[in-house]
Image (cartoon, rainbow, N blue to C red; front, side, top):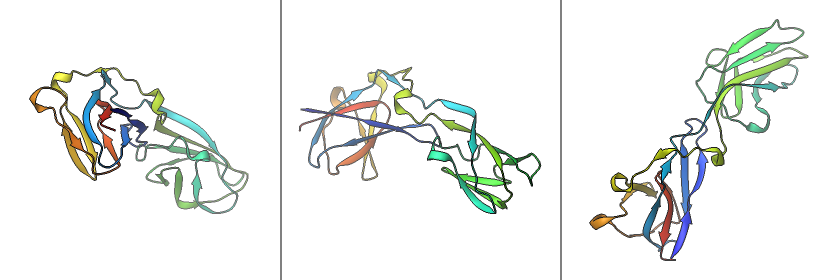
Amino acid sequence: MAKVLMTTTVNSQTGAPINTFTVTAGDIIKAVVLRTKLCPGAYEIKDFPLALTIADGSQATATIPGGSPVPISGRGATIAVQSSTITATTYVEGIDFTLSGATITFTTPYTGDNKVTTITYDYFDPVAANLAYDVPVYPSNTKGVITMDGLNLIVWNEGILAQEVKAWATTGTANGVIEALITDA
C-alpha cells in the first residue's frame, strides 16, 4: 500500500484550492483519506499597493514586478500615475487598462518621463501552506471526487459503496475533501 498525498496550489483568480496527484498508470486506488476539515478558499488581500517602474516613452503594456502576487482581474484595480508631463491621475481597470495575469495593457499608450507609478489591487494569498482548514468534514455524508482525463469519479470510502479504481492515467485532480489516496503500489 502507498499513500499518495495531494499537491495543493491556489487558483489566483478565484482563491480556490486545487489538489493534484500523481500515480502510476495501473495502480489501484484502494481508499481515500478524507480531511477532518476543509478550506473554503484562500485569504483575499485588499488594496495591495505596489510601486511599478515603467520605462520612459510610449508604453502599451507593463509587467508587475516578479509576476506576483497576481491581481484578481475585473475587481477594479487602480493605478496612480504622475510624471513631469502627467498631472496626478488615477487609471481604472476596465476603462484605462486591463489586467491579464501580471500584464497590464493600457487602453491608450502610457507616455511621459520620470514617471512615479503605483498600482493598487486585490489578490488571493497564493501560498498553499497559508490555507486555513477550518470547515468540519463528516465522512458519513461526504464524497470524494477525483478527476482523471477529464472524467469525474465519485469515490465513496465506506459501507457497500466502497470501491476500487484502477488508474488509467498518471495525473489527476481531487476535490478538497480528499487529503490523500491509498493505492496498491
